Image (cartoon, rainbow, N blue to C red):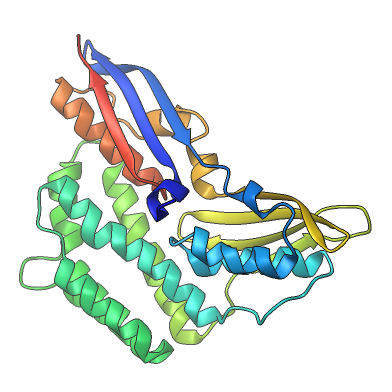
Length: 280
């Protein structure tokens, strides 16, 4: 399987009529990756997590490690907090610098993002400094007025019922908070639950999209059950969260499609997605 097929796919469909969207439907498909871990020895199962999950692979592996430790099988060393903060920042900045400009009709900030990524190999202090510089010079300021201001003008447009502006500002604030945590070398949010005899165990790790949970059971030195509860699965469990992020009035099918794509980006799926609008 490819990395994309392992992640799954998301398809959102709706019908545009009379200035709004109707029959909003969400179809999130996930391959049964966690089930392939059943029957494996704990060490082998843990080793497969970063192979199966190229996105947020460090958080995925750490959640699995914590769950196994809670079940009485401690393996490997804890992930370094600064590396987890770096992974979290990577996901926030990918959306902010690459995906949102594309939706707004602007050129993605590819060079700025690539330059920031180089600093991940230079260590915590260098990455924190690079993130602060990126925020000050590229996102909030700079000769073109700042990416955030340009995106808000193009996407929000001053409409009171459009949540995009607030969503973009929340994303920037999340980058600012993660950068401060990185600079201060704060402990990364994570933990474990359970592990009593005969019960399951859970490891959880904060990610850019929400809290990631790995739940498992062991018996006879083998995995007998493994479940992964990712933020995308919860956020796209039904269309309600998407509908809350849509403007009240959409003048035509093109505007409806653009608004629905923006709503999906606000919920931030970790899988490739497509949007279809029927206006027959």
